[in-house]
Amino acid sequence: MTRHYHFPATRATLIGVILIFVSLLPLIIFSLIDKSIISGLKFYAELFTGFPQILLGLINLLIIISGVSYIIKSRKIVWLKLDDRGVYYLPWGDGAPSRAKPLFNIFYLEESLVFIPYRDVHFAKIRENKWTGGYIRLNLKGMEYKDIKSVPFTVVQKQEIIAIINEHCNKNQKST
Image 1 (spheres, helix red, strand yellow):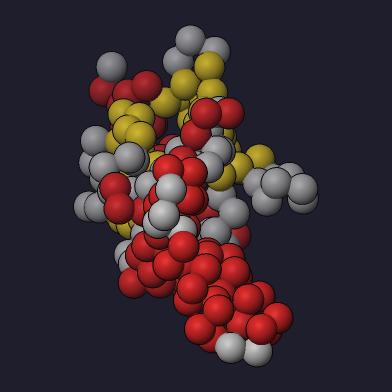
Image 2 (spheres, rainbow, N blue to C red):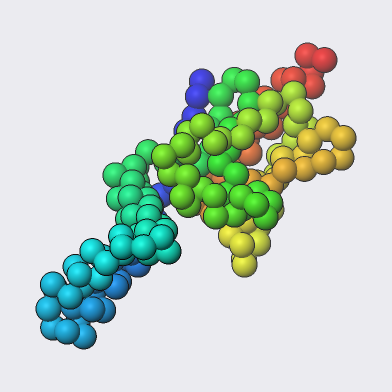
């Protein structure tokens, strides 16, 4: 039995639209200033004239492609996956180096899911926080824990996830 919990499509689409808007902002600004879309397009043509401009153009292109990818994949972004072996989750904000990584890692989100086997988990619980949106806390063996951001989930989904994880953990503890 495999259960997939997806990132809300409206949020993914909104992120994609914002990324595209930010990357097209120079076009909009130059078009409004000169009252001609040609001047905005000229700005993008001049991006590929020197080394620093090429880097800026490539970053801008990456932002546009990421925005379009978010819109295309908006209904397919898996945030959490539960199967018979363990928990797979997207490490969004899981430590300082990976905070922005999933934003531009839209092409490899399925491969970047982190796996935690049920045999390593004692139990799971919901840890609500009004500022960060709450977490699903997995208490691991060795007095460690792992927090999974549960912002995109409803209360019912959070309770379902906790029930499934705790059920599998209880099975593993009884069998050992």
